[in-house]
Image 1 (tube, rainbow, N blue to C red):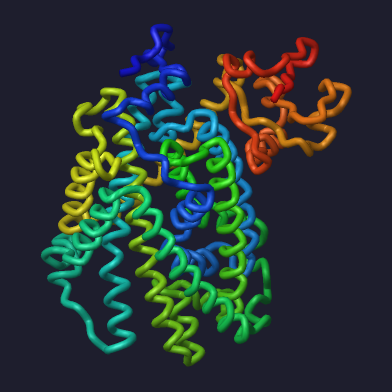
Image 2: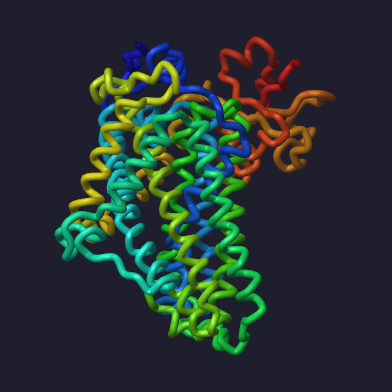
Length: 488
């Protein structure tokens, strides 16, 4: 068992990157590497596109931005990309389960890691429970739309909301828990199914809705001024939360140095395009003031006399709900697994299943807790408060990148591609080579966020993360510039 580094910080001992990676090879705590780059992208898209897209887009347009909600999504996506770059770099540099918890342990110390670990546990557990509660609501809406049947509150709502037990919330949590125990491969396949279903529904919304857009509904485009765009961005920002879940799967990726940056950044770009397209169509279907309902997209199609599209929208919301619950529980189990491996939680709970290669004990505990919360507790207020946990995690990950850049220069960033532009790797700064890409050192990379963006995406050309120890075996360092040239 790797132990924390003897040289600690004010916030307790730190684990070096080498110790963190060595811990991933422990036989009793080893996850199976079954995820390819495509799987990681699918997990990212699935984690971000949830049931909220069917609700939040219309409500943000009605209350904050009006038709300019399309620009709000662009602004929110751009801001979120800055955090995504930090996650992409650290996930490639430290491909271990735990996401922000693992990165914090390796940079800021054990105490902060312990706090952020429990912060993430709260975020994922409460988030999964809150989303599971909403499943019964969407199911009720679908049954009412299709068959005129409404399920009784006694089995669709917890005691605090006028019912006795939310049977459907408990059922989907148990189903999702079973998939998670069976292995990351089965989880990826289930995620693909749910993502395809959700995207198919959104495609129908775009195709059918696109033919019924009234451009007059977009006038004025800025009813609340530019401040409305920013206000809308602050509201829809949480539609992008989920890419951090991708980072928790780094240890289960076949090639994390390539898959993590591509998966995080590509899924964010795909989701941004989808959000902008849906927002553009929805704000064209009805005046923005009419989009403040609990189901704005479905209601907009009902107003056009297309009830069949409204029913399909509810199906998409159900698929998105299942997918979101599954990926939130996935993130929770991987963070808890990393804490067990570091003995901040009982170590025996983190041992992996001999057949499935998953942390089955911690998954079962998570399943029971989430099911109990979803079935018997009203979570509206708690779910609103849990968002601060995500912002706290983003902040610590960004601080972790800065720390590694300056305090641990031996921790290298991903390699730049062969076709890197001149302002990143100019001949005047790097010795020429016909085969190998240049690799910037942390000090140089920290001077420019755009350099970080390029280096985080460089793995599309086959770059690899190398520690200084490995680089010394196959690279020549140029002292005057701080760059190293790989020798293949």
